[in-house]
Image (cartoon, rainbow, N blue to C red):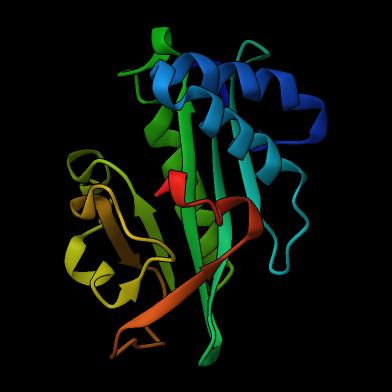
Length: 179
């Protein structure tokens, strides 16, 4: 897609990001997801939370966030979760979401992240390499409304997870309604 630019989001993008998620999600989810996106934009984490926006001719048309995860018993494991991903309706189905997801995967792989998790549509995320078998080793922080949406991918295979490991996510994701 020509004139598409992916860049790190910043606080000045807040209203545009809010608008993307308000338009991208159904009425029953839009307030919760747009609030999550803004809370993650402001959240200071170590390791860093990555929020990316997609711009077309200078207008933000999509946004994704990758925030760090931890496992209490494994200090040297580095994981992230992709949430949320939103694209303005008129831009959906045109590859914007794929560009954002791939940009994030490449960024995290370059940072030595071991696993990337997502809670979303298996048909959509499966094409990037996410799968339920990899995710089965990770226990989500809350009971899932749609367990089939829990998926993961291995980015750097030097860290094996052999048993059920409960993940700990950043504060904005610690809301049972998101799961």
